[in-house]
Image 1 (tube, helix red, strand yellow):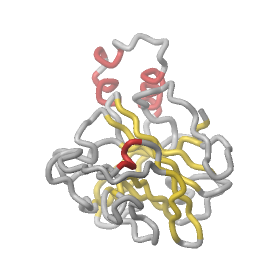
Image 2: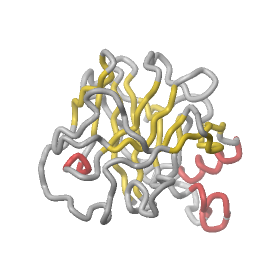
Image 3: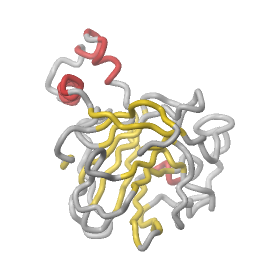
Image 4: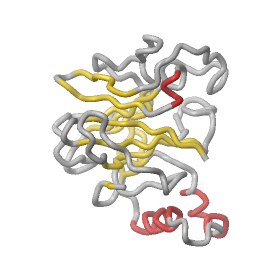
Length: 224
């Protein structure tokens, strides 16, 4: 599985204006569920820049980490392409099943926006994550080391190598060109606004892959 080189970024201090946002609404045309016509859930949006989170060969100013838990999109992968200032959905699971009460009662259409700075992941944290992802090592490590226990809960990470609930997950191929995509981000449950979070479960994770040729992002839903 291909991953971005270099260190990743966690969320840092919460601020009134920052390069990263949790929640909010993606204002780009096309960011709606083709199943329901409702806005796709924006889990995060991050401005790209050399001094923070960067994706090589991407010329869009901001990337949006989107998915839908209120329609059949939640049953498979979601892929969307940046094209001429709008989004084009090119892969999703179609269906109009009733998702009342899922992921939990009162699930919002849009989560309140909260803005953050990004901070580099400390080298010692990256070493712990690498060990947690190594299925050949003793997995009791996460119970013996307090920081490993914290890092074994999926969180929001951009770039680098995130903790993966399924470190043996298959590579993701771009549905537009067939090339292997690069793992670029992990999204965890914390929405900073609702106790239930984005998923209603701390041990669910969205893993995002990117194709630099096609400017496609793909979200893969992973559960423990």
